[in-house]
Amino acid sequence: MEGRKGRGRLRNFVRRMAMECLCSGEQLKNADETFRSSDSTITKDFSASGYSSRNGEVEQYLDNGNIEEAELSLREGVCLNYEEARALLGRLEYQRGHAEAALRVFDGIDISSLVPKMKISIARKAVRRKTRSQWDSPPMPLHAVSLLMEAIYLKARALHDLGKFKDAAQECRTILDIVEAAIPEGLPAGFGKGCKLNEIICKAVEFLPELWKLGGFSLEAISSYRRSLLNNWNLDGETIANIQKEFAAFLLYSGCEARPPNLHAQLDGSFVPRNNLEEATLLLMILLRKFNLGRVERDPTVMHHLTFALSMSGQLKPLAVQFEELLPGLLDKREWSYNVALCYLAEEDDFTALNLLKRILKSGQDSDNLKELLLASKVCVEKSAHAEGASYARRAIANIHGGCEQLAGTAGVLLGVTLSNQARYAISDAERASWQCEALEVLASAEKNMHVKDSMTGKWNQGDLLRTKARIQAAQGQFGAAVGTYTQLLALIQLRTKSFSPRTSLTKGAEDDKNLETETWKTL
Image 1 (tube, rainbow, N blue to C red):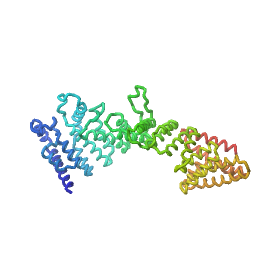
Image 2 (image 1 turned 60 degrees about the horizontal axis):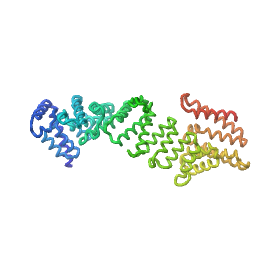
Image 3 (image 1 turned 180 degrees about the horizontal axis):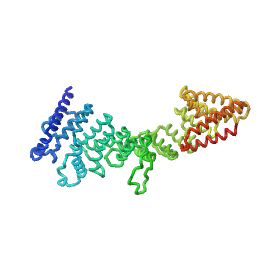
Image 4 (image 1 turned 30 degrees about the horizontal axis):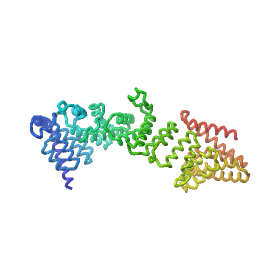
């Protein structure tokens, strides 16, 4: 209770000081001149422009919650000028959750008139190796620059809270513009140590791309991300890694195609990404290298993003290499093996893919994982390992336990196909008839499951089911039923062919449909 009263008292005091400054700005300037010409102890804390270094103490007291000390320092030092008073008052208003009131206070600070002095002070701070006499009396103490920078940042936060994202981004960008103009080569290590300036700059660097994204300005967001990564802002490793991950995700999923970055590396023959996909892939591979070197904390989502990026570009073999180079711990063993198996399967290396899946399904708690069983059964069907494929499909059906009916339908199709293929090579007629009857029952059940949730999706993926069903019907002498099933299959192929535009990159799928159509007409 006492703390609340103290904060209210200080807020009222700072507001009164600010109002006095508002009403008598010229008197304050004259007072500043008087203080600068004085030899008193307080005068030694004043800079050439009248900004008091004593405000650093006030800020520290405020941050630590020591309201009484902050008020005492303000009263004894009489150190507030117009801009500093508004900056402190705006901060207090924002901390109390009064975004609109804080914004009105911050609007009274004429930052544009202070920018030249702020740039000079930042530049002089960055070149401390010069002789002291040459760089004495900067136009503004660093803590005063910090206070004003914080005012700009909090103004951006207030605008963000009010939903004015574009205005907030423009305010936030002002901070980076000031710093870049003052130190074009970037912030030196340890810059701003002992005050908030470096912390505020880092926050602004992270915040700016988010503001552009919220405002719907995708190109500006991409430009801000590149700016944050290509320039030296004295960011820590975790912050840089987080920006890289967020930028890569935005490049992959935003739907905005930006121009390639204009890098100096283009001059020396180094790799420069040509599009969003390549730029995102490069960022994600850099992050993976950092994980493997132990420089930043591991994040499994990075590998998920990279999987999407390389899959979209058709680079499945390089993706498998990236999985294989991962150190243990980022992904669990089952997920790792499954993803590598998918990569090799896409590259038509069925033998390696099946061996990886067998390793998962051999024993232990992962021996009955549904997606691994389904994929192993599919590979066995393609490799004509019918008995093994049927075994995996039966295990998958047994482990669904009333779960996803679409998966049950998929497992049924795989089992029906393997049983149908087994029937072709049966030794006896009784064995052949038994497998054919079981295959028809399984396929009928699978067809029913595929229609339960989404009939259109079910029909879309019924090509193999219909072909297998028609073959079995023909083998059993049900020629009329087989003709009807083949007719459904041709209609499905025609529907799929018309649904894709000529530019759609589905070369393999289109070729498979064409072969299936030719085979169906020959059979009919």
